[in-house]
Amino acid sequence: MKTRPPVSLAVVIAALSMLVTGVWAWLAPERFAAWANWPNHVHFLHDAGVFQMGIGLMMLAALWWRDAVAVVLAGFVFTNTFHALNHAIDLDLGGNASDAWILLVLSAIGTLGLAVRLRALRNKPADEEASA
Image (cartoon, rainbow, N blue to C red; front, side, top):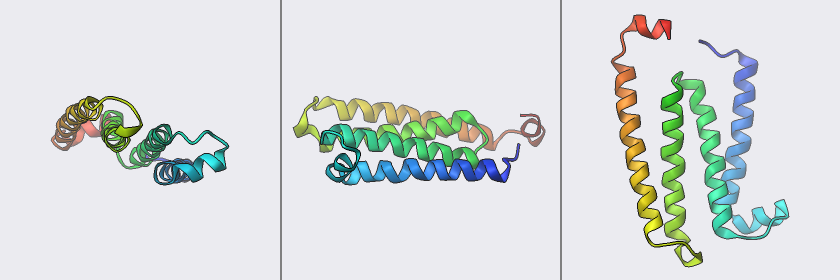
């Protein structure tokens, strides 16, 4: 199914808004907090930024991949891996030393699932793709 240009444009604009705010919150949480009039809770803003970026990336991925499972697995792997990174970077702000490792194990499971899904899609006969 082909996406109509106005729909694609709406997705791209919305995705870019998520990516810009997400990167901003992740890279400059103090400045983002001041702009948004939020408390400067660095770990929360790091996590919020990563989740915003994940939404933006999933929106863009949906324009190229027509498989919802592949899109959400890719979004999960990206978001959860950066979430793990946040827990490692922000360990001095709270949490447990095991948090990052637990999140990375979940990312590995998601990566395995994504690899299996993409392989299945690549090997799907053309007649099945046309009916999907």
